[in-house]
Length: 81
Image (cartoon, rainbow, N blue to C red; front, side):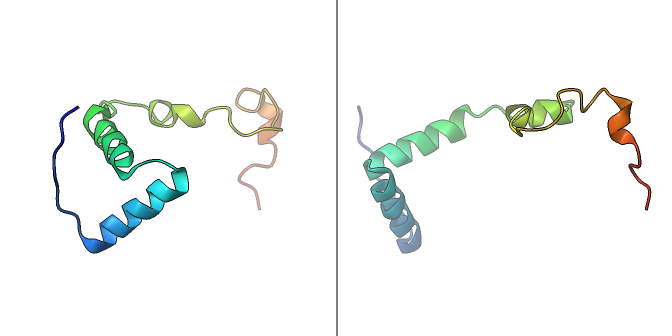
C-alpha cells in the first residue's frame, strides 16, 4: 500500500479523529473508505425512476398491509377533508 499526505482543516481533522475513535478504526481507514465511496459511486441515470433512486428503502417499513400499493380500499377517504 502506498502512502500519501494531504492537508486538512483543523475542523475536518477533528471530525475525522472523532469518527475514527467512535468506530474504533484508524483515520487512514476512514479516509480510504471515503475515497472509495466517492470514486466508485455510480450516479443514477438521468432517466432513473423514483424507485431506482430509493430502491434501498423499499420494504423497510414494517407493519403495513402487504397490498398497500395495489388494493383500492386503502385509498378510501384519501384527499378528503
